[in-house]
Length: 269
Image: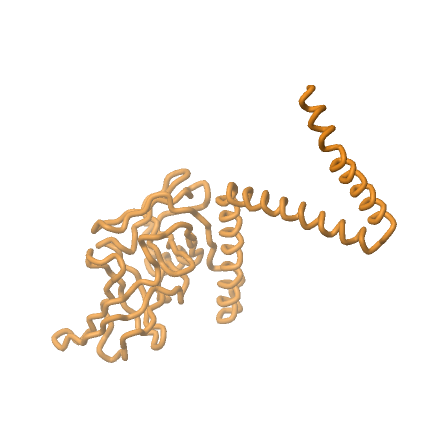
């Protein structure tokens, strides 16, 4: 205690100066509107910066919650967009044809020949088998098995995968398959020789698909005509990087069941 008192006595002139400076600043700020506003502004900048830093920490901690909210909002916007496109060509049908269910990929596989993925949405979220799965960049696969809270997805990188697609510029349809080799390249079959397919042509989902028509799939990197078969051998580079999938949308095609019943009237007998 004696040391503290001795230290304060040694610094008494300096401490007295600080006290007077503080009093003069307080009087200046109180009596002059300009200085007062500057002081308040500076204080707000400091506290605002602190709040912003805390907010960044909270955003990082709650990143999954923010992503989930963003997914739901994107799903709502996609639904409205598909509704608009649908009504622009079929005004007599009032029901929205597609519903988008946001989900998170919790298990990914891309290096095998038969790749199966797992998402964190199941039957209680409205997921059923044979629903399409997409991201904002393109297709991912098709729902294969459904549990109460989780579902498995037959990846587009599966040798049994077969998806209806078409050339964007000509609407010629074909089947998208995978030969089990590169996780970035798939094969397109059944493109006839009358189709004008070229390198860099865009491939999208077709109108005979569980996916909404026009979802981007990839671009043509090889197109060679097989003279013996009258079909093109086409290779497509996927727009989706299947090794880096995080959040997805499950597509519920509400019209698909009715269409299938019309095409197969005896299927329920």
